[in-house]
Length: 135
Image (cartoon, rainbow, N blue to C red; front, side, top):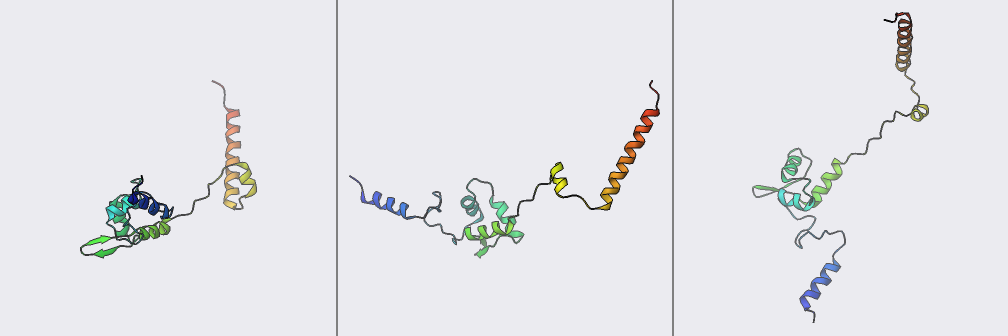
């Protein structure tokens, strides 16, 4: 025999969107004002960001806050906006392979001069080595 309350609770859970994490309480919405501690707990459940880190982001003007009484609060939407503002594109990796040098040759005269200077130094070093006596 199934209790009606258990069945209703199951139907409510099934009706919730899949994007809502299981650890979110029913009262929590994207615009619910949260203390920095609760915001850190719900937005970063793995503990990777602390309340102090969120406060620092707010102090630098990167995280929007609301003044509620004498405390500052933020929302999950504000945290999402902050994450988008702070997102950086990946830097392309520099390659030292020969294929990359062939594809993109250097046209700088200073690079050419440097290679010439290195070649001249290598030649001078070889001459000195040949002239020195074996001990």
